[in-house]
Structures are given as structure tokens and as C-alpha cells.
Length: 187
Image (cartoon, rainbow, N blue to C red; front, top):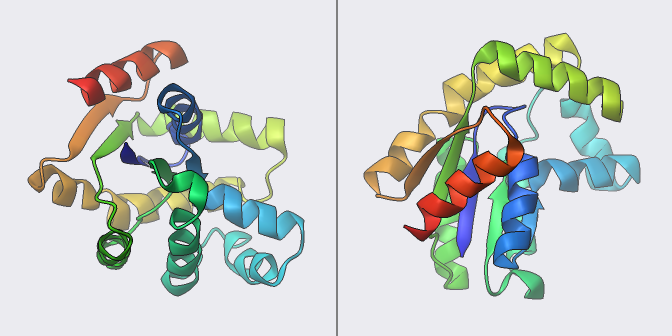
């Protein structure tokens, strides 16, 4: 199973990706986690990414595309994966299509989680307190949600037209949301 999990920040993509990875026995690949790892360890990539994330900006496509392609080519991703946080714009959809063609690994489905704006703001504020994430300031959150609405949300139409979109309500109990996703994927 090769899945994308999409939705605005705070909707629960990371939580659901981890549960789905366990269910299907495939890795959950989060571009955010990859960047945070590199930032924490002060790698060259991390220091470059920090210039953007601290301002609530997204890391440039060229850098992100390279990381994603390298990660999808790793051995643990040969039998499938769940990609969280990518693609986030039309140019990345094209880059992903090309990567998957080169790797001979077609995309199966796109899980789209959604929640009300106020729910998202509340969840992100709570996450910032619990995890101490420097990129979860109110200003950065607002900027990322606006960027998602403008650049990423329209991508769902692309996957809907391809017949790959599975839309799921991201509000409710975590286990119930996961059960809804699995049921929709296995239908």
C-alpha cells in the first residue's frame, strides 16, 4: 500500500499515519519529522530548513523533493509507505509522479483528513505546549494554515479526478477515525 495522508496542520495526519503504518506494516514517512531531526541535530540540511521553519515558511521544493525521493528509495519502503506532509503544491505533485514512475511504485490512495479551523488552532496550541515546538507560534500556525488552504487543499481535486481520494472527517476519537480510514481503504 502506497498512501499519501493530507490535510491541514493539526488535523492528526501524523497520529493517523503512525497507526496506519502499524496496521499495514509499512513505514510512515513525515517530511516534517525528517526536517525536525535534521534541525535538532544541526545538520547542514537542518540549518538550511531552520531559516524557513522559524518564520513559519515552508522549506523550498527542491530541497524537499530530494529528501522525499531518497527516502522512498530506501529498502524499508519497497513494499509500501505512507507519506505525510508531501506533496504540498502542484509542482511537488509533478515531482512525486515522476519519482514514483522512476521507482516503479504507483500511488494507491490519498487519505484527506479535515477539521474545523478552530479545532485545528486548539490542537496545534496544545501540541506546542506539550512538545515545545518552536515552529508552532500563533503567527507561524496562521501562516501555515493559510498556505495550506491556498496551495495544498486544491491538490485534493487532482487526486479526486484520478479516483484516488478518500475523504475522512478528522474530528472524533483517534481509534474511530483510524477505523474509518481503514474501512475506506479496504472497500
